[in-house]
Each structure stands twice: as structure tokens, then as C-alpha cells.
Image (cartoon, rainbow, N blue to C red; front, side):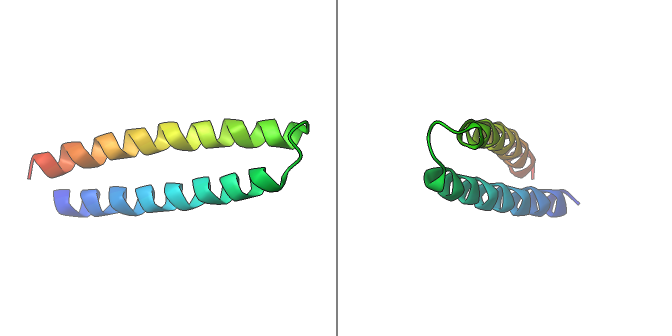
Amino acid sequence: MRKSSSGHAGQAIERVLELSADAQITRRRTPKDSPAFHSFEGAMAAYGKTLALLRHFNNGKSSTQ
């Protein structure tokens, strides 16, 4: 069961990395003074926090196996 949870966390980490990369690419195409630019900054910060949480969860599960 733990291996399955770890696998799901790994998949979630990959997805968050994909979403973060997409946001970064879109942000680079957005004018710096626009509200959308700042919106992407917030989204990337949220992805970073989510990634840190998932990595912590994934490391905790794999170390107890």
C-alpha cells in the first residue's frame, strides 16, 4: 500500500512540475507590467509550495518502507 501511495505522490510531483513549466513559459510571453504577469508569479509560488509538500510526503513514505 505504501508503495502505491509513493507512486501517486511521484505522479503528482511530475504533474506539478509540468504545470509549473507551462506557467513559466506563458509568463515569459506576458508583458511584465500586466496583471496576468503577476498572476503567474502567484501560481508559480503555489506550485513551488505544493511541490515541496509532495516531495516531503514522498520522502517520508519511501523512508519507512
